Image (cartoon, rainbow, N blue to C red; front, side, top):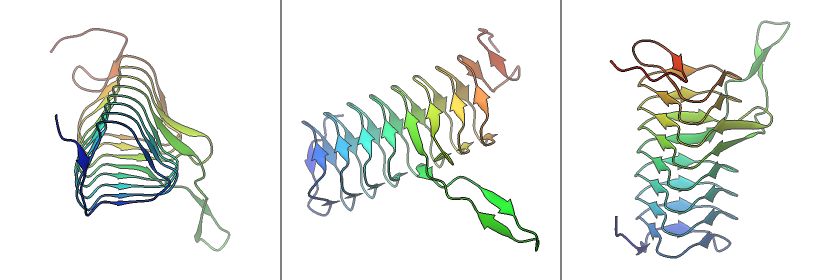
Amino acid sequence: MKKKGIAKSAEINESVIIGKDCYVGSMTCIEAETVIADNVKIFSQVFIGSNVSIGKGTIVFPGARILDDTIIGQDCVIHSGVVIGADGFGFVPQENGAYKKIPQTGIVVLGDNVDVGANSTIDRATLGVTSISNGVKLDNQIQIAHNVELGENTVIAAQSGIAGSTKIGKNCRDWWPSWTCGAHHSR
């Protein structure tokens, strides 16, 4: 992908650091204190919040949303419609039957070579980190809840949801013949 330069309609805070040979597409917004490494490609209509770090060679496709304090490793692919760093689903029942929102003050960290499919969501941790390790591949329409930890090279197929604080090991996959970890099965 040879695109380079910054579109005139991109809105980039003056404190943002952008590396060499990057591309920022039209109508993209990048907030304060964000650091974008060399050779990153950010397409049109992407929102990147404050204090985000995006590693070398990462590609962010149109319409993705990367919210405050998110850390993304090198050579990742973030597909269209992805939301990373939104609040997790945290509520405490009250005596009157209502629910009170629990502040979600943690972050999301993606390792290197992570691929996040279109319209997937990865929630920020309630406290601490939602962690997606190196080599993880997420298909389209995946929900990763607050404080989840996915081990290296884990693969999750479309329309899966992982509940809050779940820990999944290395080399796991969730397609036929069901969840497997560390094994090399073929269909």
